[in-house]
Length: 237
Image 1 (cartoon, rainbow, N blue to C red):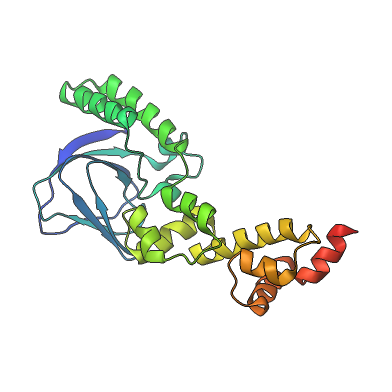
Image 2 (cartoon, rainbow, N blue to C red; image 1 turned 180 degrees about the vertical axis):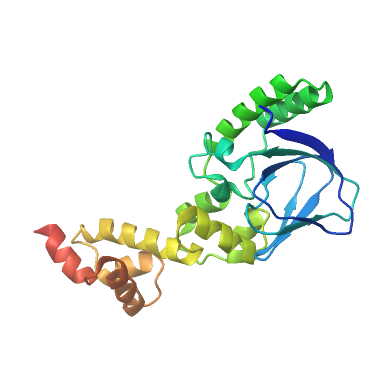
């Protein structure tokens, strides 16, 4: 496949600008590289990899010795493997385990031996793995702790993002902001609890993370267009 290109790259303190229609996958060999966009900064370390933005500018630089494998591919090629689309995979962080280490080592070995066919086969496999990777750590955390106070800085740190970049990434991925998603999960849990007539609405409000019953009622109406008491009357009939 002639439209796929790959090469090693080293980045210094001076920022290198990228902005075109070519999709680039950055795979670190050693050291770290910082990607800066209008949304914020993201550090790429040896245990992860990322897609550069498509159709918008980004800058790459580093303050330490580094080397990356840069794989360029057409956006429509990546879409064959990424069900969410390359834009939703921007900044994709892969799980750190022996499987990913092995894939990376095999890929680098094929590149070093200039085995183009082997590189393409491993790239196809790699994109498929990215598409089926587990839910990100921060989203798993939200699912477990949505009834508690959640700090955006902590969520961003789980993905190695700045808070502003994390919010932008989250909205592209989940089609809502982190705070909206927290409220969404709370309301879904509230609907389950409202089917149990033994629990008061005030108790449910506290259980899902709302300090004031008025806040719970207001948010419930926003998502369900009825009050919690009206929902309960319909559910238990």
